[in-house]
Image (tube, rainbow, N blue to C red; front, top):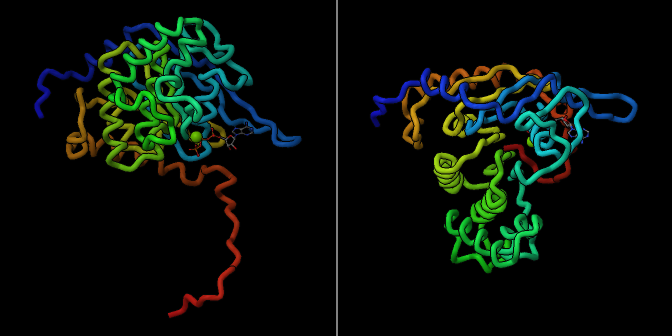
Length: 293
Ligand SMILES: Nc1ncnc2c1ncn2[C@@H]1O[C@H](COP(=O)(O)OP(=O)(O)OP(=O)(O)O)[C@@H](O)[C@H]1O
Ligand SMILES: [Mg+2]
């Protein structure tokens, strides 16, 4: 691979010149646990630029999904501000597409009906909604499956439908919370490639939550590393690897250098884990079979 014309500082300079599409200003989220309150996100400041690909990583329980839910408009937040194109988020909107953990397709609707759902809700006619849905079903390569139901599809196919269902609404932002977490490594790799292709070719900003550091480095322009208790931004890392990227990137010294940095960041947090995980119960012995050898 030669990418002699890739210049990282030019690349990021161009990104920062683009308008800010999403801005968190001192954003905090607090949950009540009985009589006590727990700060999960603590005064987050973040600016995401148009067409950026942002990956959010951090230990379990650090607030990644909490952050996604606030950006999606699913949860009200405690304090601070969160703006899309300068306007405060006040609820869900088709301009922020969501592809979340687990599959969230309607099981009683076919692939086509699932993808048509958004346009139909917007009041678009049956025929126009159908043709928009078909276009996206073609893009994700599932035209042969448009009349199938979700239970007839594999996990990877369902995730592709979920992506099409979000993209048909032409969102400005695509929010993805561990979208590929349940897929086998091979399917996951294909989905990563597919997502990068989509992102290169359409006008969209992606915020992608993942546990997988290789995935974050492969996909992101910038990685936002959160720390836990309370969730705060520990560091924002510019991924200065040439694009387009493929899994070949994993063998390069530049990748390994970044990987070590991200590893050190995340592992430094092992003692900052979710208290629920720190106090895992001891499992009582429930078998008579001897394990002695
Ligand atoms: N609705 C809620 N009410 C009370 N506490 C909550 C709520 N949602 C999340 N929390 C708490 O906030 C913390 C962060 O949860 P969150 O789901 O955002 O973590 P995460 O970083 O997405 O973890 P994982 O990597 O395991 O998905 C957890 O301690 C969780 O118990
Ligand atoms: Mg989560």
